[in-house]
Amino acid sequence: MPAHCARRRFLLGLGAFAAIRTAASAEQAAPSPFFDIRRFGALGDGAHPDTRSIQSAIDACAKSGGTVLVPSGTWLSGTLVLKSNVTLQFEAGAILRASRDLQDYPPHVPALRSYTDTYTDKSLIYAEDAENIAICGRGTLDGQGAAFSGPYKVRPYMLRFVACRNVSVEGVTLRDSPMWVQHYLACEHVRIHGITVHSRVNQNNDGIDIDACSGVTISDCDIWCGDDAIVLKATLDRPCRDVVVTNCVLSTLCNALKLGTESNGGFRNIAISNCTVYDTRLAGIAVEMVDGGLLDRVTISNIVMNNVGAPIFIRLGDRARPFIEGGSRPPAGALRNVSISHVQADGAGATGCAIAGLPGHAIENVTLDDIRLVFAGGGKPGAAPVPERPEAYPEYSMFGPLPAYGFYCRHVRNLRLRDVRTTVTQSDERPALACDDVETADLAGCDFAAGSRTASAIRLANARDVLANGCRAAGSGAAWMTVEGARTRNIHLLANDLSAARQAVSLASDVPRGAVVNETR
Image (cartoon, rainbow, N blue to C red; front, side):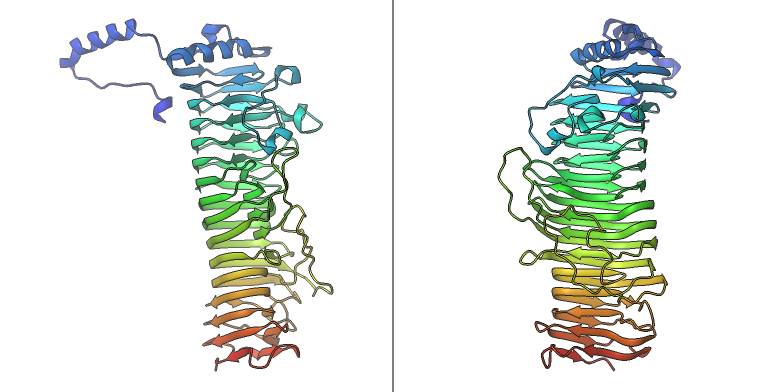
């Protein structure tokens, strides 16, 4: 049991009897650090509102600091405002049931401006500019989300903390939110541990939203939700930074692990590891920069997935949406230094995975290492070029079926694929890997299975400075690698095992002479 949720226990010998009496006298003289909401008139019958009683307990607790106890029972409530030095502890069997009456959620407009001003001004539990606050225990917060319908602002969040410091949410279950389940905006030192989210009763049911925060750990959580499961955002001009996500189980109708879509402030120093993703309609891992900002130093490792739309999606776009109304259009952002390793996925969809920047704004320094992916296959070669779509909302399916069943990489500089293996469950006429306008790429120890007897494993178009080393070719009726484009240069094949391929390399007529060197024997 966490220290802030545990009552003090002492094991003393018989010789300490006098010390016990002294401590007991001091305890009687000091005010109790625990505030039971029943002492403030809360009924807990699930029918009569207990908002005022619970808020009175919070206000009283805030004067000295301590813990507000929510015992077993069903406590009907509208908005509660959590204050500094207060822990809200839900005992086993306790249910905080959100009121269905929108009038019970008075607007709270924070002093800090962000794009989320357009999404909400109502919450079940709200805190602003507070410190040392916590929600913990084995109880449940029930948002009764199915009772709310309409646009954003008529659907309250369950938890919303703005510009708070030292925040802890631990152990509780959050279910059936009307909108985002929990939102942490510009908070410092946030710990979310061992919580359960079960929310698919309305739209925009994000599991956890970390927005322009710093010093965040999310661990050991079980999330089953309708919208993005764990999503990092930056909806104002400050970065979301120093965030760790680990040991979580995720399932969602949208994206499981996501950075973006809102990215005005950017992302720095993000580490995600040891998560399992299942039955997820969109991307398992989505890294998206479309509203300016800088994404730098993101590491994602040890992720296993089953039944996902696409295992990996990385996008640098230029929607350039200001974070405040009337604000200036931000310049195109930057996305660099992303490492994704030790990922296994089975049951991935037919679209494929995109790593896509923009002309003149390349994604930089992406490493994929020890990746095992099984795709549905069944695709056909695209007849038309893939549109750039710089201003479009980013989603793994935004380009339609990609020119590769595995990875389509475009406008990327310094791409490293190490020990990457892809295959399909049914025949696919697209290559496993397609690189278009990629500069400086290393393919090391990769095994890209051709999707069909007529498909190449790798297609390069206008690629420069590419080294393929120690790769292996499966049987194919086509060349292992096809190369095209007048800007192609310095493609080097070294020590690959291409014995199972009918042909090593097929060159289009527009490839400059000497652009491809094959030293494979």
